Image 1 (cartoon, rainbow, N blue to C red):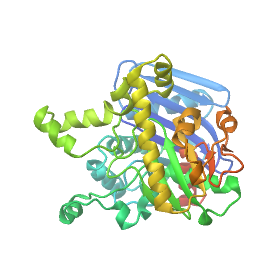
Image 2: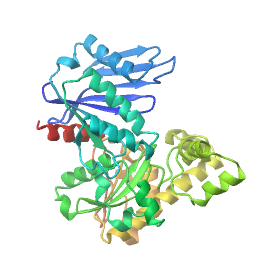
Image 3: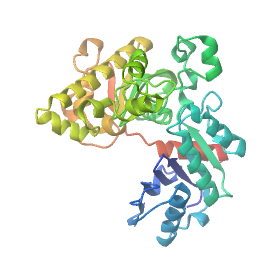
Image 4: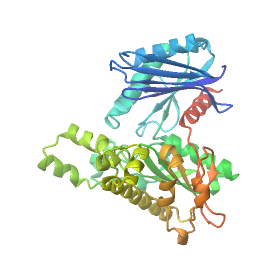
Length: 397
């Protein structure tokens, strides 16, 4: 277990965690704490071929981590004595302050908390997870790896909103981008898979999960991305609207008397695929479409329409595109999404091979035809491994 890294991803009511061997690129153990603060809390855990489960009320994140550590000990893996080199924490928003992996001090933790105004759904939960993990492992370095870091390189025209410049400066209003850990990892995997130098590739990466984002990467450097000040901007997502006319917010405030919290709930949790069809799971959406459900069909068509708009925009932004890569839950598993997103683009040198696209393989693979000028790929993402490796590199492992 020596030189392993514990990766913690703390959400508002859950904690995902993995013990990772960053050198070997494998997860030694993993677990999920769910429904924190509810009477029907649950922890599921895997260590090798051993699986464990805990059911019952979990008062808070600190108790969730304490119970998870106890379960590991019962399974023969004492994390307090496992030789963990670092604990890597996923932190959603780094603002303009953090754009590389950072060892967490009291000052860093306070700044992450202060940035909660930019990510009220995420950073507070990240802070709670950090505090709980530091309590369990006080003598191990803790490292924050920021979702926004990879997009720190966005050029001024791509990161700037056309609003009053003084207001923007005073309140940190700019485009930050998210899912950066995934976009950086996947673009690096593409270059490795193709045996190419990342510096010579222009790439479009499509991270399509319940949250979804697109990026344009030139020579290994991010030059545009679909998410902005928050993860709400951009593509249609499971429960988030993505791009809308900002005037809709004012209209609903005036005509429907929706306050800020109600608008936040509407756009983040009751929009996207769920808002249009009632479901946000793509498997369920496909079942509804196959049954003739018109709302589900429209939801899918809107999703694909927005996705194609971003692909087209990034083809222009990059000028020359070498690869288009699909990743994350939907991107890796929904062959119909991949086919429909790139349908009819043969004139732009993009041709998807139906047989390759339809193959049920969970490995990095090419799905374009041999004649396609643009190589289209599916590459599984592994944000936990990326966080583990960044943390290990920072502490000198």
